[in-house]
Structure formats: C-alpha cells, structure tokens
Amino acid sequence: MQQTDRRNAENLAEAIAGATPRALQRFLTEATWSDQAVTSRLQAYVGRRLGGALQVYIVDDTGFAKQGRKSVGVARQYSGTLGKVANCQVGVFLAWASEQGHALVDKALYLPREWTQDRDRCRAAGVPEEIGYRSKAELALEMLRQARQGGHWSTDWVTADAGYGEVPSFRDALDTEGWRYVVAVPSTLTVFTQAVQMAVPAWSGRGRQPTREQVVAGEPAAQTVATLVTQWPAAQWRMLTVAEGAQGPRTYQFAAMRVWESRDGLPGRESWLLVRGNWDGSELKYHLANAPADTPLLQLAQVSALRWPVETEFQIEKGETGLDEYEVRSWLGWHHHITMALLAGAFLLTLQRDWGEKAAPDHPRAADAGLTRTAAAAHVDER
Image 1 (cartoon, rainbow, N blue to C red):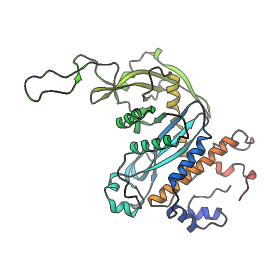
Image 2 (cartoon, helix red, strand yellow; image 1 turned 90 degrees about the vertical axis):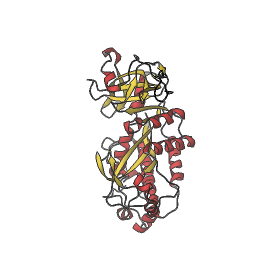
Image 3 (tube, one colour; image 1 turned 180 degrees about the vertical axis):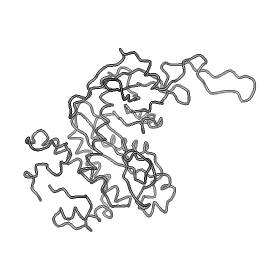
Image 4 (spheres, rainbow, N blue to C red; image 1 turned 30 degrees about the vertical axis):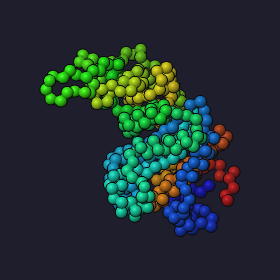
C-alpha cells in the first residue's frame, strides 16, 4: 500500500490507478449514496468481528480545526482535541469496544445554535431542512438507538466521559430506555449517601402555601463526590486489573458505594459511585453507574476502563485514515468523508484481527501507528 502525504483528492488520485481529483471530489460532495446505509453495513461488519464476554458502546466527540465561516457547523467553540475555544467543527462519535478490539462505528456533526438559527446559512451548506438544534448528548442518544435497532451487538453497556456523564437528561434517557451506564462525572457532582426523609414544609400562614417536598431538617446533606471519597477508609479500596495494555496489565485502585443523585438539592436515582485511582491514590476519576446493586466491582471497573479505546481510535483514524484531512464544506461532503474514514478504520481492524498475531518480527503489529506504511505490502495485490 502507498501512503500519501495528505489524504486529499489530488494526492489520492495519484495513488489510485485511473482516478482523477474531480471524480474523487464528486464522490464525496455530489454523489447521492447514503452514508446511513453504509454505516449500517459497517456496523454489521464490525459486529461480526468484535465479540467477547464484555462489550461496551462508547460515545465521545472530537474537534476539527477549520478556518473561515462556510464549512458546515464551524464556529468558535470548545474543542477537547484542541484544549481550548477555537474555530472548529465538532463531531460526535459512537464506538464499540470489547476485549477483542475497538472501532468507530457512527458519527454525527454537531451544529451550534448560531447555525440552526440561520436557515439561509444552513441551506448554503446543504443542511437538510428538517435538521434543527440537537445537543451533543442528544446526538449520542440517537446513534445509540439506531445501533440498538440494527441489532448487530448484544450489549446494553454504555460509557462516556464527563462531558456527557454530567448531563442529567442523558443519564435519565439511558436509564429509561434500559441501557446500563458507567459514565464519568466531575468531582463537583453532589450526591446523598443514604435515603433521606422528604416532606412538604408546614405552611406558616403567610405567602404561597408550599406544595413541593423538601429534605427534612436534620437529615444528612448532599456532598460532592470529591469530599465524600476523602472519608473512605483504606480498606474500601481494591487493586484490580481491568485489561492487558501494551506495557502490561492495567491495574488501578477502585472503590464504590451506593449513593443517591442530588437534583436541585433533592435525592434522585440510586446509583453506584465508582472511583478509580492510580496505585498511589493519585489522579482520581469519578463515575456514576445505574447498574443493579449486586453488580460486581470488577465489572463496573472493566466497563469504565473500556472508555479509553475511543481516544485511541481518534488518534489512529486521524493519523492513518485521514479522518480530519478533508477539504469539503458541505453537510453531504462531511458525512461522506467521515463515513469513508470509518470504513478505512474497519479495514485496519481487519488487519489487526487477521494479521496481528502473525506479523514477522520486523513488522509492527497491525494496531501500531504507521500501519498503512508497512502492513505486509508484499502480500497484497496492488490492484
């Protein structure tokens, strides 16, 4: 295989016999093929290759730095990829992960309100008329529902970073629809450590008569998860190996307890508070999980640990499949390009699954960076 300097139409046309830059550009920006239909086939393909006892959906987003105002969805907005507010597009992605591998399997372009409130700007970029404002969490939920309807994976586990986990409506929708989640939350999230008594306050005879229940005076107050963890005894923590990493077993400290979410100072759903730390207790990460009370700690820990592959996928596909190397501006062009990048990612997964354990000593494993430059080219028909 040949690695071009940049995965744009001009360079790709030089690498593909009989192709022209114009034909490749039209394939992305004008051809009427359905990216949703291709995505469905992609999920079926990946679903046959990623089995295992523990399977997890992951939702996350990544930014694409862009100049100007015409690229669909571009705005000054925060990008975790860039680590700052910058002119960029943001894509929300769905990934699958198991102990057998991981892959990006769906995508959605986030449109800020400044776009959805400007219909002329949307029309110029080819945004369908029926597309209105949807938050990143709403986009993630739509992809999860579509993946479940496709039926290519038999899991209800979902994990996500704190950008999604801190959204109560996201957690509520997952719980209502029968998903089991382990999602990261900020250290400032407040919880109750026990069921507290609620009552409607007695009316003083003045003003409006109260009708809403409040926590009874004297009951324990909600506290932040960071404060709560400082009260846990050392015996509550356990060292658990959650996966085998490139550098050996991935082992962390974990502890968990049942808590009740605090919603505007009132107790909400009973959940697991799961906390992960390094072996020395540093870099604590906090999670909420709606799993049943008898769920083993190891299972909660393993689900939380399966969030990291989505970051690896972003790195691989930006480095190897040109996920962020597009020169299209329209709605159709963005969805077509990203879909093709996800297909290329599935091809890399196939190499990893089929050739990864068979590579000669001087060949890198299929999951390693630089794959497209070195992957057993002598065994591939150049056509």
